[in-house]
Length: 250
Ligand SMILES: NC(=O)c1ccc[n+]([C@@H]2O[C@H](COP(=O)([O-])OP(=O)(O)OC[C@H]3O[C@@H](n4cnc5c(N)ncnc54)[C@H](OP(=O)(O)O)[C@@H]3O)[C@@H](O)[C@H]2O)c1
Image (tube, rainbow, N blue to C red):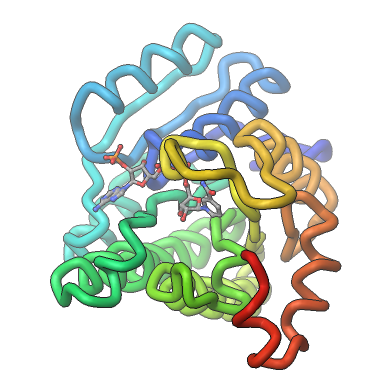
């Protein structure tokens, strides 16, 4: 169970090699000696390195295989974890090349399958888990890109819009089961996903997202933007006429 300070005993990272997910695990590890972390991720050197990194912080770290596109396995992966899941972080995702993404069917389909379909089937499995446990918090890493999709990366934005809507709704559904969903909408985060790209205005770090998540879980929030000022920016941008929006340098 999560304690009164919002600290979990067992954290599940779906997309267990994600820079943001690992920063969240590190933030909790610093507050909870001996934290149990399960990394659900594709096997390989990146996952092995993540296990070593968390073990070095005093975590008890397990790794389980997880492939976002293998939707038929998601119930088994989430349901097969023997210890109660206090917080599950849904962190897997692909950015992809934005121009290829709207011109190549296979690339578009992969983005949709990983970021949306896989997120939905994982969410269904997490909902079942909350029902069985009677508690649990899901942290869903959405994006401001889904709030008002831009010409520059609208395929990614569309997948995040869909997953954001799903997890917002899941939050309503699991409330009556003792659960909660926190939807996190970061702006540009300097991580492996954005390596080599020019940083957007208000760019942030995985560590800043992690601290915002820890605070929001503790405070019982259901939706946050990171940085917080992004909420004001996006509420304005949502209402800018399309003819102007398309000319903005974002
Ligand atoms: N970075 C940003 O600017 C930003 C902004 C807003 C939201 N987000 C969202 O935050 C989340 C984490 O992103 P990040 O910045 O931490 O990026 P990251 O370090 O690149 O992490 C992406 C994760 O997705 C996993 N993944 C990709 N395809 C997968 C598949 N088919 N099956 C299983 N796992 C798969 C990767 O696993 P492998 O190691 O196996 O490749 C990795 O764990 C993503 O959902 C992203 O959309 C990021």
